[in-house]
Length: 98
Image (cartoon, rainbow, N blue to C red; front, side, top):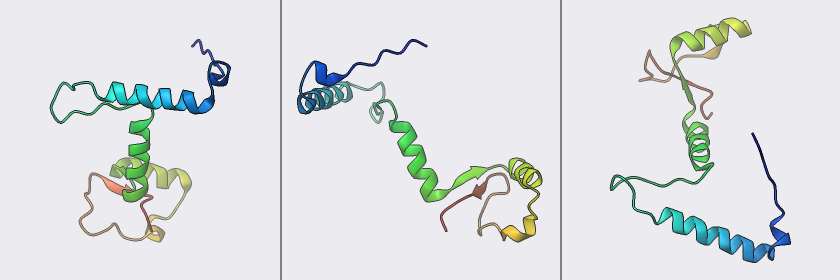
């Protein structure tokens, strides 16, 4: 992968550059979406949304993956406590908030 890094202060003051980037993002996001409820995301936005969601609700794993993690780490599953009431047998919360 070819990467080219440029120092924006060579071309403009940093405040001007930041304003121009904000203006460009606003322009891109103002485009019409394919569906009325569609969204235009900038690079990294979906990752921030996923991280926020996972920090709030935990990471869901299927039972087989959870069993493999427990077996690999040699953790006695009985020490981990019960699953929350209503937790799906197919998708178990993992590392959720305290």
